[in-house]
Length: 319
Image (cartoon, rainbow, N blue to C red):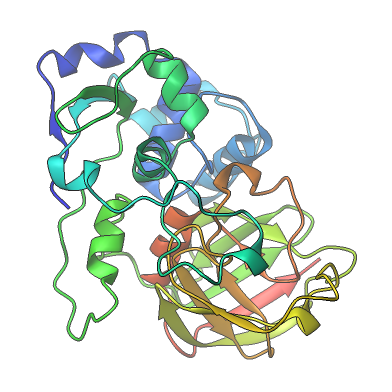
């Protein structure tokens, strides 16, 4: 997919950006994800601030205090949004407007893609369709060549990946995620905080992502585990026996890959059978809804994490 070019007058787009929106974009750039970028002071935003403060040796207040602003912005004005022109190749990607939300009903589709161009654009710029409407107005036309205001998530170069039969390089680019990421030595998932923390070999916190972790029916399996491998743009084997809320009439089915599949764009397999870390078709619900025991991230955060970890990476699940 082609890069998003800045539209004429694009430098003026950020003049009215709120301080919260500026901070969310800066946190995303730094690897401390606020989840969806929407200009709201939600829980994921405060957790991202606290994680960034921890990594920079600042008091963990979760507030955008002057010291945190200086560390985030470096004393320079932060442009949080940009006006871009939608590339033809992005606008013409195959959409699936009639894709059902029920997992068991998705088996008949050959690709679990985005339902609309608005949804695809929102994921590319780490936001939500509602936030795009708020930035542009309800009557904004979305089509090839159209100009739209979006969070300032930069273009990611198309990576060269050997043996990339599933189009992972295109997926990374379509999510605004660079293939080159810092390498993780170990990660920790906190059930109570709802965050996944990434550490390097020096035990330094280098990234943090908001997550959804389990439920009362399928609690997070606390303890130490290991990453066994990764499946990028995976098929999904739906086994109703593993789902407490499955219908009695449901049958085992194989679902095609796609960002709107049950595990999103990537499955990071754990040494605990049937458990993994993965993406989601509903990024706005991260931290707000339950999962079936696994650890769920936005697709763009899951893709970034997948570039940081490897088979053998240690994983600690804690309360």
